[in-house]
Image 1 (cartoon, rainbow, N blue to C red):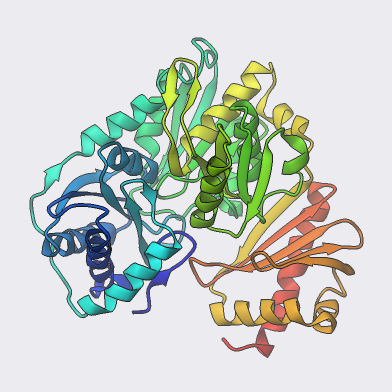
Image 2 (cartoon, helix red, strand yellow):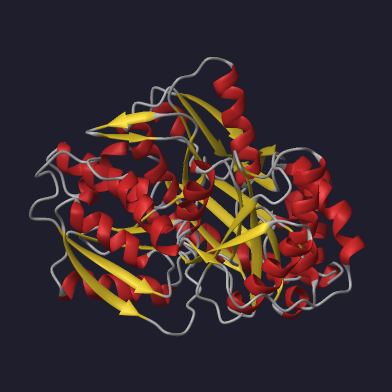
Length: 475
């Protein structure tokens, strides 16, 4: 089984999932929930998917696998991951989302949800232990399932009804880059109900892998062009399954996901924030909430949120550098009640960004500038062997001499943080962070500096050093 659990669900090449591996993990998931009395025999399990070419086939195989365990798969069609999670949790049921999120179309994945939210690392271990029992076994799915597609989409739209005060979005002209996002229709409906004028752009029948944490130059160029040519107050989009937001301000600049998370924390008056070590180092000093740092991945963020709740915190949110925001408990805003949704959501940060700026009488760019965060940048080296990434980061983490040599053209290392990958604070006050991706063969690179130019330059020079060093490690 080449497919494996990453930072968020099972991931792998399409062929490594359709060979029966995805179905085996779906059946193992059902067995795990049944054996631990988390769901009863015959229980419904809600199935959603993104718009990848392989997603219908994988969904059908997973449906058959669930039936083989005596469970009832329920069709929810193409919809955002948070909408599927909300629909299933509201019915006390489990769910499977067939998606590879932001990674290319030759890959895919499965996200697993218990009735109380995303699975944790213990669940992953239980599923991984059981899955080999069901291999091989390429299954064809049933042709007819109970269909909750319309109900699930409508419930997600209703979740945000009344979130913004009447008239707050009046006059706002917002572009929606649809591409192949599973969230485009519901996001358009939510923003329209809030009173904004929506300009729908760039719809694609072919899957487009939009990464909101390492936004491509092609996406930046498209967004900037649309903002200017359509006189937009901002532009929004999401990744493939709609759990990570992309927000572009009125100048055409992409707003980083951790800045969006900070805006949500401030707008919702959070008293606890949980975010990975990759998020901006200025978060702690820019909000009143108690901030807890974790490794990268929603399971770690969710565990940190649970700990905050156990300590009596009453307004708990989590967010990642990709902009996805999670809520730990009920929060009331405007005339709506936001039930806890402990999975990444793209809609809440999009709404909060425009609402916070509008409430302050500012443009998006002015509001973000007012946060006063250090300037951060991020990128990735694609098709970079995972073994090479891990070997390089391991040596640089353990060997001071190797680390000094690696950074000699970048800056003198002072301190390191090994929470997740290698995060190095340099003598000049800048930060460079290397982290092997948990979802694909990629090296993730993050930086912080006093301004945009130096932050981007750090990324460029670090990418060059990584490529120069790669030949010394297994690949």
